[in-house]
Length: 476
Ligand SMILES: [Zn+2]
Image 1 (tube, protein in one colour):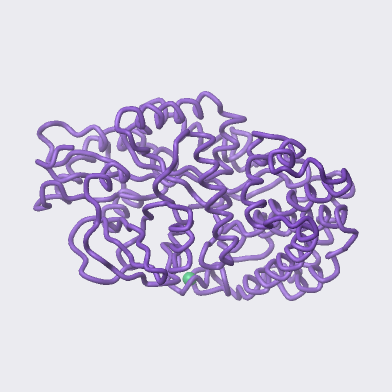
Image 2 (cartoon, protein in one colour):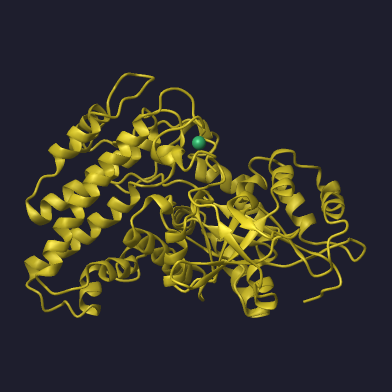
């Protein structure tokens, strides 16, 4: 790696919320995405495909959310393959991945229990390995939400680094992206790259023409030390979807000329050459899109308008339901003397379609269980997937309960409840319904319980419980 110039890494966070129906697995038609069938297709046409075919994925650092990768694999396979091939070419060239993992369901990790943090991250690592090959070194934290316990889970799973903003760490910060190291309560370390907020926001919200992009970086890096790193990290959709010139801008940024003041690299490659020496501390319970101690996803806060107490009520309902589902799962698993949570972590291979349920049990040496018990176990493991999907961050991100995103969380809960009932004959409907009655939409006055009733009726009638409309949502 040349050290004669300052270095720039562009990191793209590529993500779309889950849009498949938890009952039918079908993707909804979204009229607001016209002329495309849904937003995944439209953003693919505007951003993912042109970036892939411009070769941009060979020169950036990136993460791709599990729900988006799965859709792209099925519905935009040429683009998907192009991205997979780009990452593999990068790995062969440099011996290190330019992609990083993402916790699979875009869960706000500090709000999840330890075993759920590990589940989300280990599923993210397995998804990465399955799609791109190799082992990722880094993790994208959804919404950059962080606390020490989250980084303990990152260390448990042997990942080396995460990305944060400069307000999320304190200590002797130098200009540039670091990397720094954070000492964990366990005594272990995780490396942290710090993104350049000014440069990242300039490109996100005030993007220049492609012909000016490198000049902006030259100007921003004027005076930067040779060999130092600057990190421009933002939503991948910035390039092509939010700004139509973005694909050309990303191409220009990542192909600097000899006369430019910088060269490019990626995080994994830089970390290998520059292990951190300076220690910083975390500012816990911070995130990049809420300055209120994670209130946006936990309690409601001033980030979204109106009375948004429904967020705390919805989370309590989902948390209570999770505990009930987990208790029933642990009860069944205990009778077979199995390790509940490592079994759940391993179940991602079924979600990825690598093995069938029965094959999975055989791999886990459970093929000798009575067939009725095998069936119950698979139903409870399947319920765990929907129970994880309930916590997708977008359910809490916006202002009102009466939107498709919270509805998606409730629909996934209903699906998990159904699977639990098949497996154990225990019906968790009543307690969840009761908890949801506390969550009220300011816009319509309806409660989560009424939304749940509607979902139950529609699921019974074979209609999509998610409805068929979705406003353009501005997801990160
Ligand atoms: Zn907030």
